[in-house]
Length: 480
Image 1: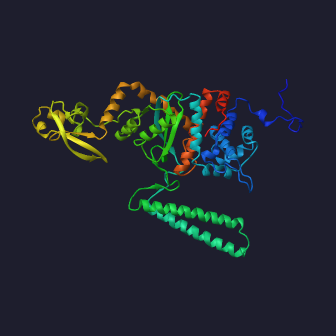
Image 2 (image 1 turned 135 degrees about the vertical axis):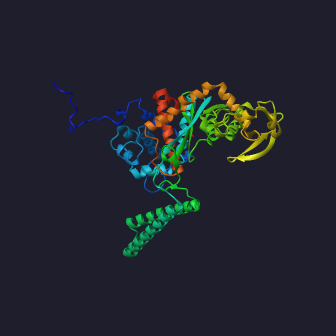
Image 3 (image 1 turned 90 degrees about the vertical axis):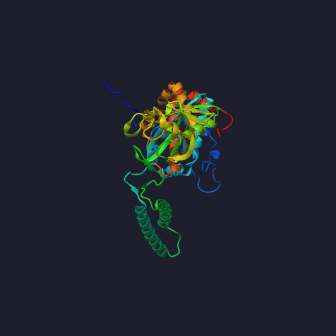
């Protein structure tokens, strides 16, 4: 019995199949093509969205955007790999109509349009809202550390950065001497490509030198170390050097509503900004937000309340109820606050009145005490190891207590948080999207916007057919 055999490679065909025939009607690339076509790239701010009247024609930014969306969707983020794929991947040949831009053109497109990719992400979410894929009732917020383009060992002090500046100055001087030599040999002729290359290198080195000089001034007089490759990255737990990535995920279909990349090493100051951004993106008047204990901070909870956002954030563990040498005392929770009289009632029935304001860990708190009552109280040994008991109350304590009560009453919402948001980062790590390829805060934010859009695309492709998505794009007006 013989095997199946393909066509003879040298056989000629009078009617060869078109590229269109190689791409099935339900292929995701057809949606990518239609989605980019529906965008108003001019209003989104993409450079060269309107072709120049003179000069050599350039690549349509829509085609390069198609290339990036396809690449990220298929775990191809490198500009060099994308270049090679354009020459052998039939789906990319379909998307780009056989165009094959070089890797520098591809990389420059991402660099030149860094602030536009967030807009593309928002436009896709508008389509998701149109298809009723967002519940817009409950959103879970979480953060994770992503690695930057920086070896953790390459972290320097001000003195070491000063040495780098000196090295750059010597390199710039060498390039300038080389440039003078090139000019002398040219004897007035037009600049050669080598001269142009030298001028570009000198400009890059001078820009780098200015950055390092600013960093030296910032670190002067401190022992702090900063990354030397990506100057805007910071030391982060688990990854060494990187960024803190934040996402807000809708509970209905686990789609990312909004995302952010920050330099902070913890999540404590991120809740309000992420919650308000999610509420605006969903276009609702009220919203419930759940997050883990790392987001618990009084001022953040208060800001959410003012924005009509109901928060479910467990408090972090405290040492309340533990005195010196581990001795057990009455926890703060057993002291009842009277809002009308602005005082606390202790377990012994005495009233602790307001004494004065102090600063504790950078925050303003009010102290309450009753020195006289503590002196004669039979429960003193169970209450304090000092002469008298002091209770502190933060500026936003009322909202903190309200959130604590809400958490106790709705433990099922707090329990849902993990199922809503944590697998998002798990998926991104599985796709190798948990390390950045670009440097600088603006660039990594653009890069993660593409990753977040990739995640939403993959989710929506499981929820809706390509035909339904294409039908949702049908509109006389472009997405703006």
